[in-house]
Length: 351
Image (cartoon, rainbow, N blue to C red; front, top):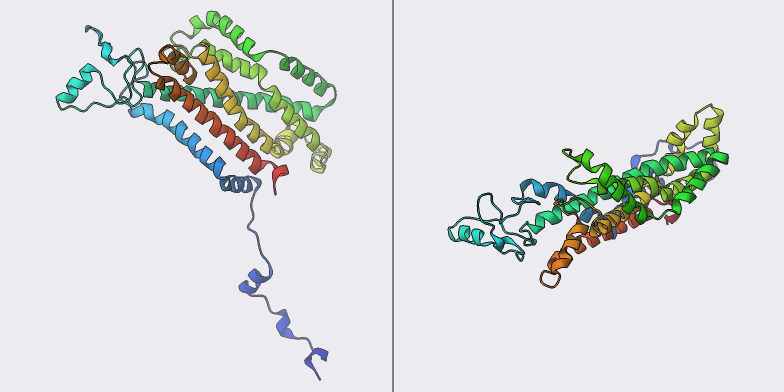
């Protein structure tokens, strides 16, 4: 009789499978998280990865280069106490030297070159560009944090509470949307210059000035509305989910549900909106500094450097081109990185 028709049980069929057989039969995928999956997709995006590298290099350069650079952003090289002013340091071209430095070179001494030359006051232009980049990046990051905190708080409350609370908050948002932001910055800068100017004397904020503080206030008052609307829309769609209803039935407080359930599920929108808010803040600061409403002199900003370069545009065009290129590179890299974050972390864009 054929073995297929026998009633006896084949014991070999019940032997445990080997590791090789398990790998062949079941293709196991290693456990992962939402953040890990998003980072893998982000790193596969070459444009976003290159943009991130550029942002990191520029940020680290603005932090560490001033630590060992021999020139200061406010040091006028041709001015020494008790000696006549040496005007040969003014408006130097890149990699050129003043008369005093040329004498040192002839004597066999080493003189550190002026990579970008000097400005009209004899200050090293490279270190001023580095400090200007530091100011612009700091304004962009801190302004985005202010917008994130306020927008996330207001949007989550409006979306979770709903009803009259949502109605009142949204009407306030509509009123804020109608306010002209540039006019508010100019008015606040004029008022705070008189009120905060004496109070900032002798403090660490004196070098930055009241104009930047007014810019932070405007970001905190006006620019959070877009973030709040995005988070409100996300929470309105999430608050009817089963896990939220289960938490409410278990007696969980609204603040706990927002922190533990709703905001973590909005993290993709939060990350993307924050990343795209940074270049907007940097461009706004540069634009205001170009108009003279930025940091106080002699502290440089990329916008103020471009504004100062207009006086000698025909003779020294590189002094306008350099800060303009840095601003363009920073804003473009941040925008491309924000687009990469959106493609990587937005579940609707997954393929």
